[in-house]
Length: 211
Image (cartoon, rainbow, N blue to C red):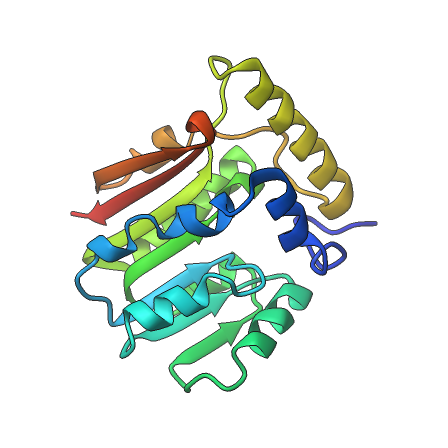
């Protein structure tokens, strides 16, 4: 039986599938506000996939220590292979998100690119709380994900249903539908600095700051 949120089986095809449906949007959207961040010394990436997000971060913050958490073993291996010659500033971890709870590390920049949509409502709240507690005061959080609700255009709702159905079968994704991200984030002391929408609002990149 497929484990919960297990992307190992589709890891060789995931980047190609995302490009076929959304082109370059899934690559560029999570980095929308990167040039607005003046400094980052310790960066946490949660659910970075095959590592495509790493090069822009390495270039933007050449002195930063980057911690890369990806629970999919196959995706993590791809990311490590792509950056096997990178400096020792890169740290790769295959633990699930819950393992971060016991970490003494704190970060001034966190990125969650298309990962929080995998979780059920309860686990979404847990995930946001864990990450929030790892973020330093005045630290920046770049969140990017799908935003579809009952008021979205019919084609977005249909596409979202198809994607959820596919990933439910292929990965055992625990979420049955997209959660209300705004409501979940608003439970924490986070300032919304900026929002950028893509694909007619189906994808949103949000820049939060811990206050």
